[in-house]
Length: 111
Image 1 (cartoon, one colour):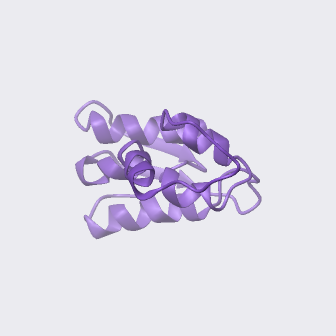
Image 2 (spheres, rainbow, N blue to C red):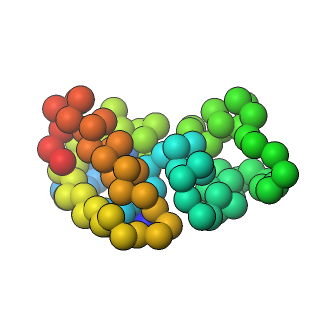
């Protein structure tokens, strides 16, 4: 989950440094995750933003969250990635990994 989040950030921001990457149930997109997880506060915290149960993120906040998500760097990834996705993860929906897989396939990357 969080390890996958960090791993995908690293291979996107430092595309020449890593030879391979394995990510298990990675958080890929904080924006798409916030509405489908039981830990929306974590999504906001990872983006460096305050969390409130009484309101939804506005467009500016969503933009900030997307900019702090690994999917933002998907176009820079050169490292082959093995995604391990589980349907029973209670925190990170497997759709997060599928989103990254599709981004890699759209760019003809190995995933």
